[in-house]
Length: 79
Image (cartoon, rainbow, N blue to C red):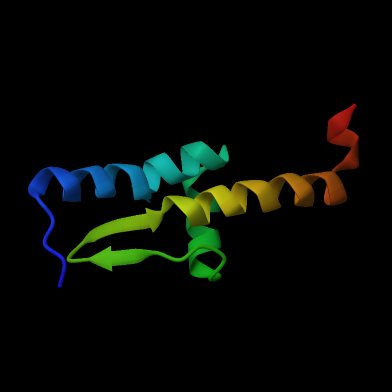
């Protein structure tokens, strides 16, 4: 197993994971809307002893998908 220093682990945590509030703010949606996505399995939640985290890459991917979904279902928003 690879040994990481405390600083390396904190850097990984900071760069690769988001808290609930960071995630829904990045997506530009409300907390209830975000939790609905989690509940429906659209976003995977990592639950470690009460701490809920989300992979930053998953949120970035959802952000890209969200843009194309908005164009498809809300074309009037682009005017």
